[in-house]
Image (tube, rainbow, N blue to C red):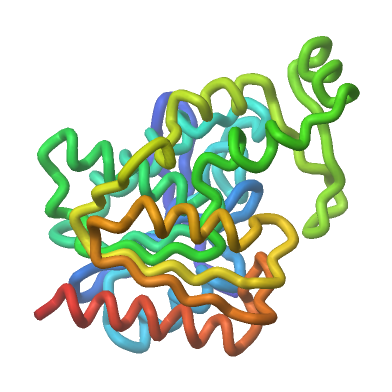
Length: 258
């Protein structure tokens, strides 16, 4: 695990923790998942890969995550997107490869859209997505809401579900779900204007592979590839999964550098 201390950027009054490694371009930007942090196995693996290659690498924690300030339950896709864009604009130069895991894939795709709208689309040279969960609030959470969940959303503003990855339950707030509807990306064709590589486990209990295949179908206008891992779970953190990750990112970096 990286024992270096993070640096902080104030975004909307919250101290957002980040770690930046200087190096050659195209740079690599890590975007973590829901309730994960930048010291997880995949992010650490990419950090070590970048150090060995002398490649620029940037990662951060969303507000309410990891070492960043803020309350997790106050987070929304819009807020975490704004923080990610602020860190990206402050600490990267030239073309970058976005690497998004689970919810981070949603953030990556929204970043790509927002940078395109602001005339910065050329900054994204490629996108690598692991177990991508764009639009998960509408596509994966809302369809499974029980009567008790709906009652909790109405009375408390949130509901909880047990987590396989933490002793603490996942919290889904009404604000997260409502804000998610304003950030949907899987409503029609997705033109990223850059190569996209998706890695998806067929044994993923959280994000079904059908979700990745639906995303692929919307990327038909772009140079998109999908790698299905027969026994891969949602974490995709086994040695063979991590090797596939670094190989995919390196391939994207080398392609963008040509």
